[in-house]
Image (cartoon, rainbow, N blue to C red; front, side, top):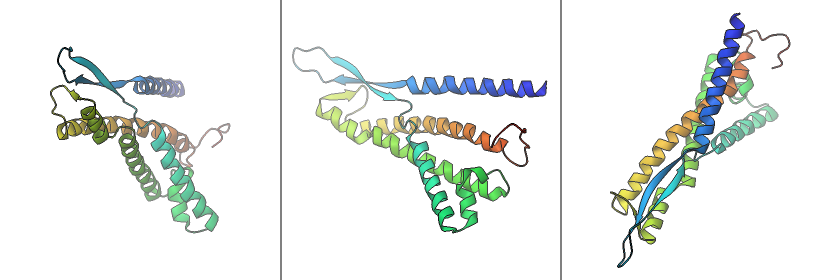
Length: 193
């Protein structure tokens, strides 16, 4: 009976995560912009769409690639088994605490770095502010130039936090498989780690 509750809870968490992932993928922030008026024309309004999942899955791919590369090079060169254990996700939950703490910590730091990098790459506040000024547009209530850049930078910082939390949850769900394969958790006979 206890296993059914655990499996039911796990399925519920998975469904909630999938709903959150779908919402995050489909959602966007609409930044209202106004075109400057010229003689005889009405004020034109529009918006700049900015996706909430602006970095997409690229930070996970880049971080995993770096971990795989370091793990492969360390393994091929028989360099240092401690370094191999830190960068090989399969060994994180099999023993020494400092190895998995350092490995997960490094993974999260790289994930945050690549999330910031790809968010900045996909939406450069300076470039967008310059384009708005060039086309005679502005964000309502914000002066063109430096204030617009600061406004866009603040929005991108908030989006990066959402992206980082989402991707960290994704990695956590992925790592649960390895936690289940730990020698301390005694997986069932039919489960292949």
